[in-house]
Length: 304
Image (tube, rainbow, N blue to C red; front, side, top):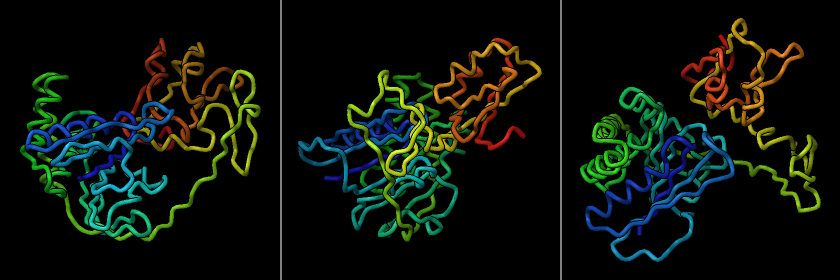
């Protein structure tokens, strides 16, 4: 049995990638399964998806802990707890990054064949959006010779074409084809030691009425409103808000609509964005009645 683990962020299509790879495997005679694991967050949050491929019926239903193949769809995930952890000694890695494989450090003990591709650029050029799942599947075909590119392209055209229209199916297949050609295969060596983060899991009598936590500290971990106080979720973003103060009418709609409390209300009711936490979801720009907020492509640390 082959076990595959996808690591992505909400909105990158990790779940569809796992399902499409399983679909492609079935087309060439394998049995397969695919399913996701979501956390509590929304778009931009880390997401895992799993696939199993075998010649016999698959009865295992657990998450994948010892993968033969790890697909990392966002380089910023390397800042978290070792996405390549548990990789088998002969396992392989496919990663969305502009660097070559030998320039990567996937964590201590991870010495693996690795394929790298700038799937984000391919997706933006081909699909006009940062959804990298189909490009990553093209890279998978280049690195891992279990499911060939032809079967993956067929599955992409049927699955995406059936859901989004024939043209979308063709464009996604083109993204996979381009990624297959662009993937660089090499070997990566891991030296980095991941430190297990401290976690505070409150018991029932530590949670205040209304379940809204006040700013405090427990077991050396800072706790605050919502869930983002210690997690710099601004690193997840694909786009950055540009605030045009001269157009702002101080209606406060952006302030109370921000799901991550990343918009700071000033004393004069104008706004300031805390880009360490802004995920670039664009809700503020959508709700603004006077178009005082534009969303600029790319992650930026300042307005300029």
